[in-house]
Image: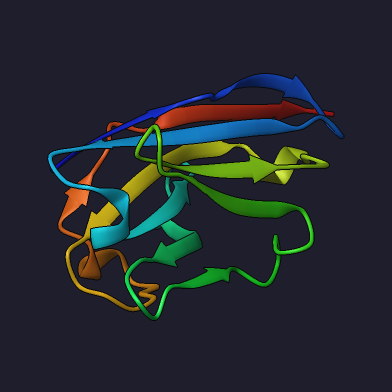
Length: 124
């Protein structure tokens, strides 16, 4: 399984971005896929996750759930993170992660496959 993120960039506060995680080697519905973010000097933190299969579920971290939304694109075999009303505190490297195990997982250690990251910078 390989993950490739895209969609990061530099924007002004209040803007929106859509990050995309394209999955190869399997199909998105067979995985749990998550977005994490990290700023220098801090631990990587959970943002949102989607778990596929019959009991598909989505979970978004409380502090961003009113601004961030996940969507699945089965045609492109990808998971997208729609980020709205961006603020400077959203500035981070955003990573896509995947695990073959079903169910929402919030811990970095639960994911065995990671993308290379995409930088999001929000200026005030």
